[in-house]
Image (cartoon, rainbow, N blue to C red; front, top):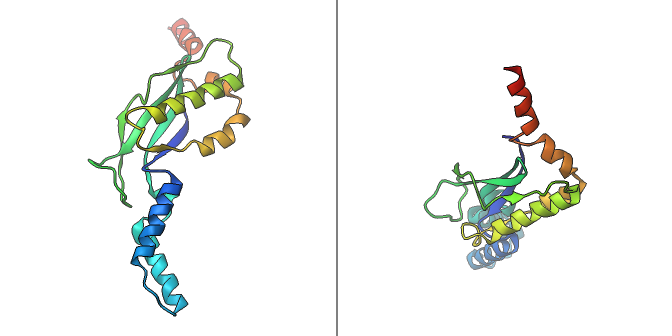
Length: 171
């Protein structure tokens, strides 16, 4: 399978995480006139709470790929009974489908395919499996308009009818 993008899924949105982290740090601090000691304590509590949101709060990934005329996404998630704030994670394959496939109509332009990809990810965010989490499409949305999605959907396709026909002729 030719995957073309991994979309991170977070336990919660960055602003919510940082607000909770800030409240935790504030509750753990005590007054001191030693600024070095205060900075060390803040750093310790920041790390103990979970550190940076961007890499430590990921609870899964949606692996995007094309299959024929469809946009599909596999679901990879942490191997845990409960999704909690943690720094030790093991990811496992959780399903070949996040939400139902998004059909790409014949003759779609690159912009139309990109819009369909965003629609697929929007449906994933609203799906019962993921609605309590945060699907981060920010990097995808930064690079997406610059990609030739028409060419990508033909090149990075797990089901290439023309390739299948050629291989049948050789036998």
